[in-house]
Every structure is written in C-alpha cells, then in structure tokens.
Length: 167
Image 1 (cartoon, rainbow, N blue to C red):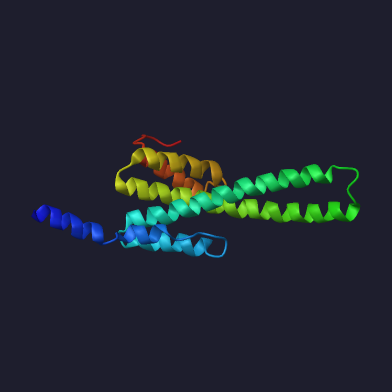
Image 2: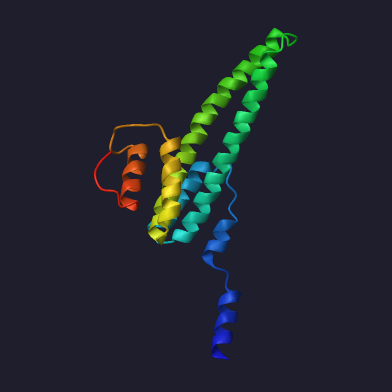
C-alpha cells in the first residue's frame, strides 16, 4: 500500500528533464541552448543536458540536410540557359550564404556530438559515446592543436574505447 502511494506521488510530480525536453531549438537560440546544456552538465543534470543536446544536434542535422537540398536546386537552376542573368546572380549569392550556413551548422553539429558523447560517457553508455565521438571527428575541422574540438574528440574516443597508445 505504501509503495503504491509513493509511486503515485512520484508520477504526479513531473521530472525536471520532461520540462527541458519541450525546449524548441531554432537559429535564434542555438548557441544559448548549447550553453544551457553545458550548465545542466555542470549542475549534474545529465539527462536534462542530453535532452537539450539531442535537440540541438537534430536541429543542426536537419538544417544541414535542407541546405544541401536547396543548394542542389539552386545549382541546377543556375545551369538552365533560359534563366535570366540577374536571377543566376541572385541564386549565386544565395549559394554563398548557404555555404556560410553549412560551415556554421556543421560546427554546431560537431560540438553537439562531442557534448553528447561526454554526457553519454558520464551515464556509462560507451557505445553511444563512441558513436557521437566518431561523428564529431567526421564533422569538425581537423586540427593538431591539443585544445581543438577535433583533437579532444579523438583523445576522448581513445579513452572511452580503452585504446592504448597514440595515433
């Protein structure tokens, strides 16, 4: 009887992570969301941080997919000889903007992947941590600087995987 009452009380109180899961990530709050996830990790709220990071990662991934789609359409349209020169120039300028957005969202996606790996490792899920570390290394720009996100991802992958030696 007492166990049932406790279960009802716990079910009546929404968990903190449920309220964070409702956060909508968009371009205006993208970097604030990453900072919020870092704050949640510092406070020991790994599940809350995971929810935010998964939302940031999903937003960046979907944005990149859309940008690639739009860029392909613009490229195809620009190759049409019937298209007026001013329209071709407009599409060219849009493609330049898409290029800068692809760079931006790729960086955010890589940073989110790294932070997701840290959160999953903290929860003891080495498989998910390795998955996101691999993605971070594929997404982030390569650098030999030990403080770079790419090198931190690579080194953390070695640690999570218990790999000996350096490579």
